[in-house]
Amino acid sequence: MSAPLRTGNDSRCCIESGAPYEWVRVEDQSHPQYAEYEAWLASMTPMSRAIEEGETDELFEAAAAGLLEDSGDNFSPIKPVTHKPEIYELRRRSEVSSLRTYIRFYHSEPDALPKCLVALHRHIKSDEDGQTDALAHSIQLHEMCERVSWGT
Image 1 (cartoon, helix red, strand yellow):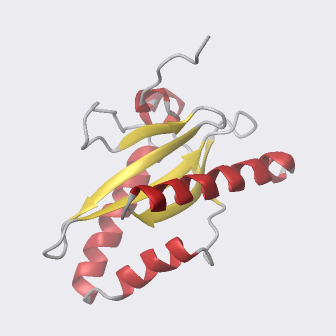
Image 2: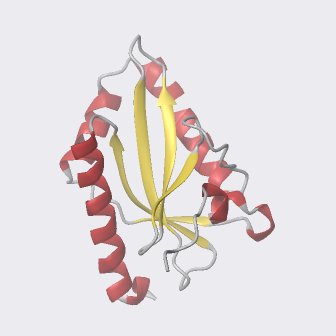
């Protein structure tokens, strides 16, 4: 029997009654996709970068407050991406330049940390292979943290 179909609304990011949640960051800043994201930010004018970082902060703050909602379409700010381990994708579309840039942030919500959202990875969406690599890296980080009981 297959796992039940999930939506982003199954995430803590969509459950206001349990909020506030705390972000725990375990992202590997040396990963090439993370570095690409940082280089993209660094290439912006100071005003554009401030706007971009502000919009990302708003997304993370809304998630921590349990205020996100899976709209069920391509513009939804949250989607489930794997079931075991359970990983969600926060999604943003940047329009600070003439080109649209799609940004993805992966996180998990371990039972061992019921008041936390664990940031695993971030990247600029480019192609299917890049997305597959990003997800594989996120799963690897999740499993590594799980093996050490999330540092608790």
